[in-house]
Image (cartoon, rainbow, N blue to C red; front, side, top):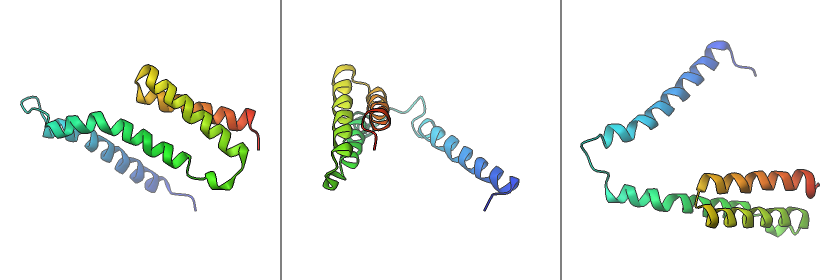
Length: 112
């Protein structure tokens, strides 16, 4: 069922308002005069690695299938992600290299 123009516009406006609100929230709470709490700084240091760990667990969750064409590209992509993260310490770069590498492997090397 296709959406009408007004329904599409409402969805876009709600998404834009939610995005703007999430970007504005930290500035409203921790303005220039307030110091960022230690707990928030701690989360900023710990969460990128926790998210990376969660992505690895999700990626490797279907090893029970036993299909080597599924397992090998995932292991290579996880290794590439780990090496890139250890080398550059950049979460976005690490996840990008792993994702692009995995997509390349499943589409051009381990064709199913």
